[in-house]
Image (tube, rainbow, N blue to C red):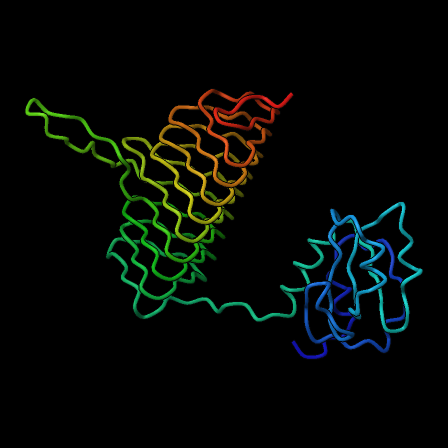
Length: 301
């Protein structure tokens, strides 16, 4: 990023409410945390920060993105060296700016990748070094990081992003003892179906379905070090934070927010638009629209 014109940066910010200060002499060459920014940096003030006045006054950032605040007049702190852009969604604004000015990873399949003969690979796909693709379908504009394993019978739809060191479609933990008391593993032949624009964090494991499929609906986001058991269903736009475990055949609805280190036991149902608090152990069905937390998790009163 070298001296991108401020006008170009502002042009990609959605829902601009106002621009405070004169940016004609400001030169931006980096995006920095608000406390580390200098006069040539762009930064932002998060909506949930309580000391916005102190930060707005003290920051050296040349261009500051922030949200409307009825009790703060940011124009007081605007100068010809510090410009404020007020928008309805500061975090989204920063995303759009970074997308504009920082180079994106080029699409392509690394020469070390192993791809099964019956795999189907879409257009503009990126697959990192040492990954292995089984007899599966990979849609258009999919990104798969390094050291990933995509087993047979996996369907990954357009725009999904599988981060480094993740495994999709491996076997889960399901045994039955024979008449000699020997544990025999139940077959996992159902596969995995991943919707469009799903993101799966590094070191996560998505188990194959046993007979039916494990399904992750479009727009769902799964953090690092998560485990999703066989025949689990994850609904549209649901967010599952790092180190969470969703045991086999659980059903998680749409727009659900699951905090870090949550465990949901097998066959449990989580209703739409519900919230599960950090570290919770969920052993009962959660109705739609409710917040549950604790061990065992109970409804927040």
